[in-house]
Image 1 (cartoon, chains in turn red, yellow):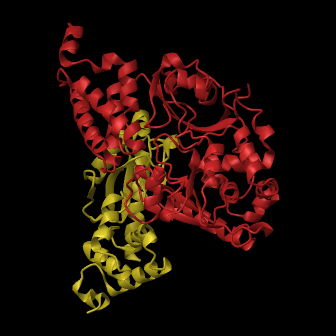
Image 2 (tube, rainbow over the protein chains, first blue to last red; image 1 turned 180 degrees about the vertical axis):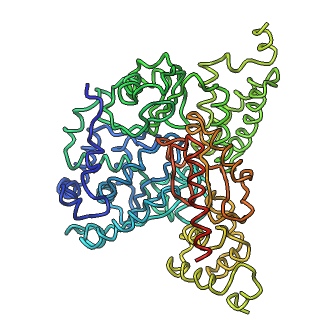
Image 3 (spheres, each protein chain N blue to C red; image 1 turned 60 degrees about the vertical axis):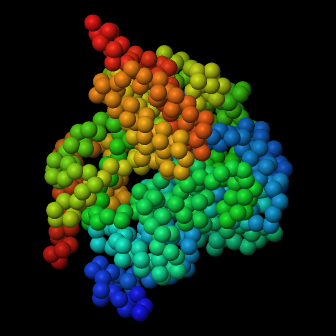
Length: 421
Length: 177
């Protein structure tokens, strides 16, 4: 099987990202033209054939999302692009934003036309400030050529695009929180229902999509869905951009067909473990993803095979860790991240994270008490079930999977002394 | 008395700064939804890159927002600071990827060389050091962000010190010109 492919990323380094003319010279805006010819039903049908699942991490069916967004009635609807890529070990959106801003804009326009939205908002994290000006300029150029504005491309549809900045808050990657932030408030999630598809930005129906998802939608429009479904496996169709990092020789972003094994990704794309080290475990899907021991590396990178191993693709983060890292230090680092990033709105996440952090601190100092592990697991389960938003629900994935796969790292004080004697 | 006339009573909010803040607020059309962008832009032009109380009050009055509304945003977002920082803000990524690749060495050198702890500024006010969550530079870990620019693969002492020296010289040169 071909190891790397170029479908979503096919425009990378092919044009000057700050010039619309350059983009048009390589077939830019053909995708939007096609989407206009197709009409909403056919566009959604194509997305359905491509079986796209949301690429930000939630893996929600795109055709379903756009169908629901389209069916919501109302004169004003919004498309939001979530470019608040805050998940540690995820930097694929950064590359799309840097090298192919115009295709993303096309993706937003196509989504807008499909669901009858009147405006789009792109929320770019503060850490990518340097990319915000690129987008502001790209939008200006698109307006001049009537790709944005009133009656775009000769249709009866109006579509405007605006750039909003984040200010360093991981939780703003959550849909309703992101909307609060666009409205200029602190980032705390909203209660659902009402769902943002019905009552989102400024109380209007809103369709939030990830950068990669929208870019992929535009690429499918341009090349046709049949080109896309050539890649991948039967149940995991197509390609995915992964962010490979950690103790690996060639870290970076790679577009791969679904179905490569984890081993192929680590060795053939990543060039193996740094300094000839030995793989200890991997973490998929960023800090909120689960970890899995080296024994799983023959698993194919597909939704269904990873699910069987209790893993998820999530955002496409792929962190490789060698045997020099202590599991407990790794988990503590993840825990520090979530303590820092919890917005504090709900008790399970705010207090759960703090208490688990204290317990992990004791494990690091080897001062753990008899029931510490049980307490931490109980808190983690409560967080998973009772947190207000996805942040709290997934914050303990790494910890719980570490306990499952590496139980010896979490022995109580007495068990440790028993084992060493 | 209008707040513009009170600039004389303030230490940081000079007339010139107030004028520039007005321009930022006008650029965003006094739009409440742009409060985050306004505060980020203002913070860049305040010496030592922060939002002091008097400026928070000033922006609140300009935009007709309660002070609590302004502080809701300032205190929530990491990129905004109510505390005095420095000419150059060094954010060291302390998330899991940088730790796995090995950033302990980077954290130590920065603290030793600048002779400060995290969340502190150097005596001359040039550098401010803080830990930051992942800023998406995992492919060049271990990395820092210096006033928004990412520097990666900082795996030797020389690379780190040369970088800091370059910025220190730049600042001193600018002051003497």
